[in-house]
Image 1: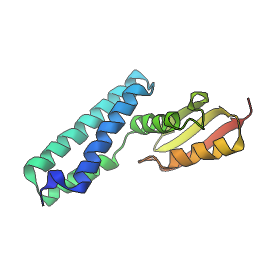
Image 2 (image 1 turned 90 degrees about the horizontal axis):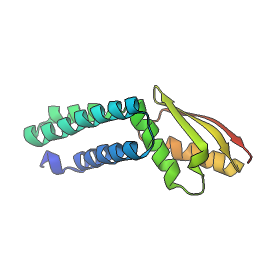
Image 3 (image 1 turned 90 degrees about the vertical axis):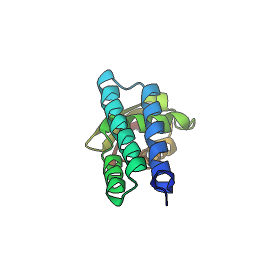
Image 4 (image 1 turned 30 degrees about the horizontal axis):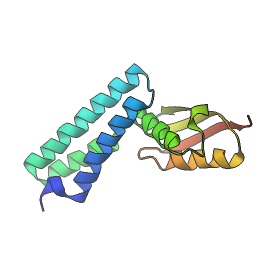
Length: 138
């Protein structure tokens, strides 16, 4: 099996590219963007290494790089998920991440939207927990 074309490598490479693009479009701070760019470079370098070496050790290194998703990358991915879901109304939701725990603050119009925001957030790769502090109302 060619390591670069394995489903795991293809998925992780695509994931890193999508996360990077999401961060650039998500309104993260300059510092968060720099952190994310650094992490993306590391993941990209590891992916290239896997393609060149084709060894089990290199695949383990790729897995490790993917597991070290930064808080900035998680914040960007959550914002992207919320923005993509028109029903939630992400423009009223603030997202912060610390140690892979995401905090949602702001207001949503209904209790159902509050629950949906939590579910969308939990589904993001790298999220270990969600603190939903969203208020309900207009």
